[in-house]
Amino acid sequence: METLGIIGCGNMGSAIALSLEQKTFVYDTDSQKVTDLAAAGSHICQAATLAQLFEETETLMLCIKPQILPSLYPQLRKLKSDQKKWISVAAGVPLLTLTKELETDEVVRYMPNIAASYKQSVTAIASACNCSQEHLDSASAIASRFGSSFVLPESQFSAFIGISGSAIAYVLQFFHALAMGGVREGIAYQNALDIAIQTTLSAATIAQNDHSGVVTLATRVCSAGGTTIEGMHALAKGGFDTVVMEAVHASAEKSRKLEELAK
Image 1 (cartoon, rainbow, N blue to C red):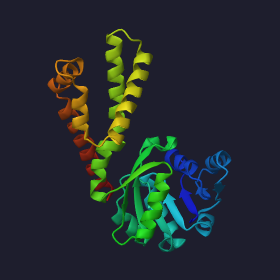
Image 2 (image 1 turned 135 degrees about the horizontal axis):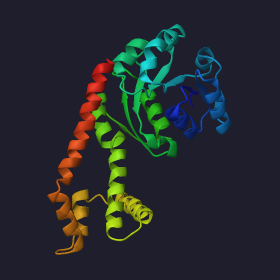
Image 3 (image 1 turned 135 degrees about the vertical axis):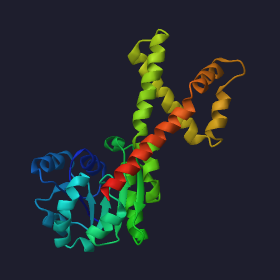
Image 4 (image 1 turned 30 degrees about the vertical axis):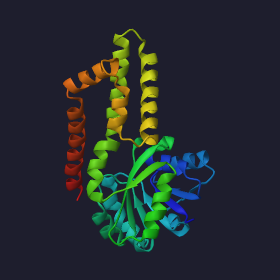
């Protein structure tokens, strides 16, 4: 297994580094962050300089803020970035820019979500046009260490944000709304919230294991003239499906605009 190097140990870089089992070198301009991270994981090694990071690793992961990249590219090229394989977690920076600035086609782009720290991230993966299948497979294997991953065309990344990255907030808001409904009916908020979260996990388990389709599964819960169909009617009356679809579209559209600005 190739030795991995991570540039940047903010929240995402740290979460990814800690989730891995392979030997991993980490570099950050804030050396104390790296020292603390290395102390938290026996497989994590501190690289004192970018040069050392390049010497010790075959694959490098960019886990830094996108606005920092333009000033970093010249340093990476000087260290022969074209001889390395790359994974970028930098939000909004397209593969076209990365391959041009790093002077190599061996580039894979990740779009993880904040659950990476719990090894439950859902990560979109896209590779440059001429990237090797070997590197894509390796990058996919790394992503599997901190959750699940989906290989998508980069053109679908904005849509992915709408149904995954941003959707975590939608689901959390849904938990709150369900809990508040429970409060209205006489259940204490925290108890209602715990029930709502566990019920959602139950629904997810059913959907993952029974492939009848989510619409079919939902109709099975609805008895004729029963309680569930009354609740479903209330959701339909309130435009539930439309509101959710609009939320996905709004997040995706915002992502597309931000990506245009990043080019």
